[in-house]
Length: 121
Image 1 (cartoon, rainbow, N blue to C red):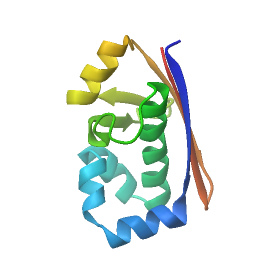
Image 2 (cartoon, helix red, strand yellow):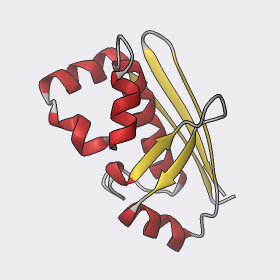
Image 3 (tube, rainbow, N blue to C red):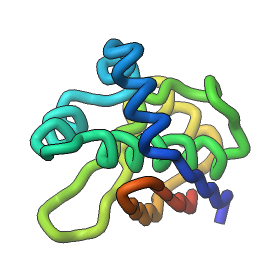
């Protein structure tokens, strides 16, 4: 194991951030993440839990915000299976240099909190 990261996001606070700065959607989330999140009546929870997973991935590598572009960390859902991370560009290079070969991801959210745990293997 290379590292483990956990992150917790207040959904109302994240909703306000998205409302104040609509460009956050395009800066932080890839097209499929936006499409999935926006297909729900209240997309804020889906966005918040994906943000939590991205930040947990940074923590699993011992990095803080800015350690790699959040946009380059994609949370992918395939049917009913568990979520997984797909890294692109600079994030893929940082993970490769750290020796990451696989990621384990778990995400959950209530009406108020979004949580993600990520393990880098």
